[in-house]
Image (cartoon, rainbow, N blue to C red):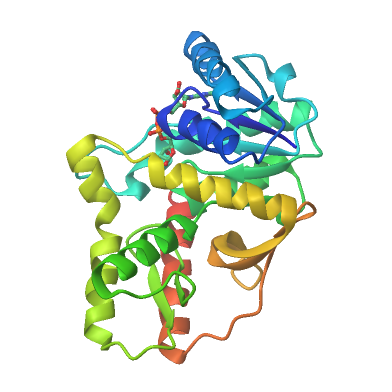
Length: 288
Ligand code: APR
């Protein structure tokens, strides 16, 4: 499998590339970035690690869109990340421009790949990537609330001893209006679960305040998505929601042919919060 990463010289893109190689999930990676020297340097650094990982993945980097030809997945991590005190939605004006330009160039070289958006605000950018690409809606998707879901599961285990195999998700916007979806077997008081959820919703901001940005957890979430594309899987990612005609975090079936929303019954309260999240994303889309 070949994966290209637009914005691949950045922290999230390069760490994702390293994680994909480490987990043995790809045969070939192209790191494309306007910072072409840095992209080449990241590719070389990863290439130097191959003998130690007993891997023969081909990793190249540069700024040439011809390099992405033949990709199974083109992932977009290009854009500006948020600074302390900013919400993801604050980035939309800058990053929508970048996404549209990048997607135009991507589809000119490679129309067969799945288009996987990671840059934020991811639900808004995935919508614009879909519109700009002219691809079917299931060929375009975003990382969405998989990242929040992995954060939630990690912290539920750490705080309350909840096993990773238990069903707990975050749906909706990858942003302030996200909602928790708990289907745990064990008996845990709702307020304890909600305390962990609140901690997770603020968790990325906490990491940004302390180390400047987040990249390890995003890279692992990305790797889980690439694995699902390869082997098939069901994960909460930013997927096309037909009744709202936009992208939002919801369980989805992922395969080489694309990403489709999976059936999942929400409670009345969850459905209300999901609807609210859709409205927040709709307003942000209209306000670009
Ligand atoms: N084309 C290609 N690459 C670009 C473009 C462009 N038009 N514009 C910016 N880039 C590149 C930058 O050169 C940089 O290498 O995107 C990369 C972004 O990397 P970082 O600044 O390190 O940002 P990072 O922390 O990786 O976050 C990237 O992922 O999680 C999200 O919110 C985050 O939107 C942000 C994105």
